[in-house]
Image 1 (tube, helix red, strand yellow):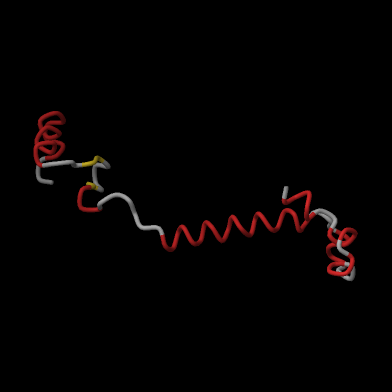
Image 2 (spheres, one colour):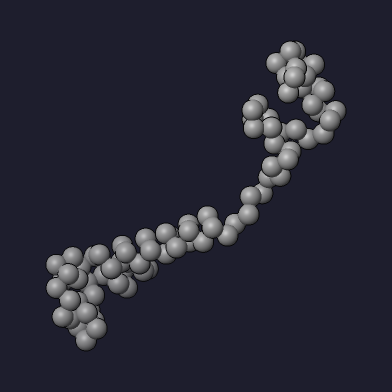
Length: 87
């Protein structure tokens, strides 16, 4: 919908974009630029303001395993042997 509404802006909206040589030469730039700009803004807002969902205290970065409780850690140690000793 956006692409069709914004395509060839210099021909369709001459009062607004008629003098713009760039949009005359590249008539499909505007319908590509608008959603791309929206995507970049949405990504930046998400990256800056969205909080991490996992609790960093429950995540063991050296083994990449979720540690749910002390009983689970004991089970992992018994399952994997001495791999977890001293950690």
